[in-house]
Length: 154
Image 1 (cartoon, rainbow, N blue to C red):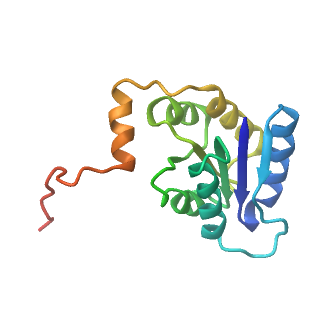
Image 2: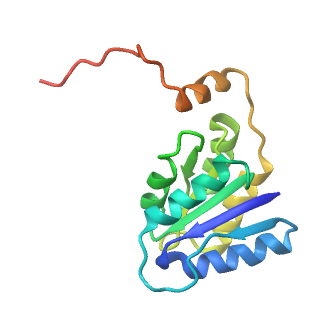
């Protein structure tokens, strides 16, 4: 599988370990940076990752930052990408099965390398279930214009 991986400076070490492991597992891996621990802005790397997944250059993506939160928000700005922030394998599997997630996000300060590998394995090994989930996934990229009305809080 073609997998793109990116991070911010806080996740350089985890990214390197996961990149090498994915290559050993037989995947084609594109490391989108950064290459040093010099401070960078995670949105730059999240947007870059989202772009290569959205245009089909990569089939799946892995986004890493200190907590996983910031980079997952930036990746999800692209309507063609569904990035799930996870910390354990069941969530990674359900993100694929129910949400057709094509990017997995994790926090290097919160998730060890063995748990990250377990999450990635679940993510890559799980197929999208389709069916009733397809209608919901379609709405993520194309929200209805006349969606449900929301009553403002008083």
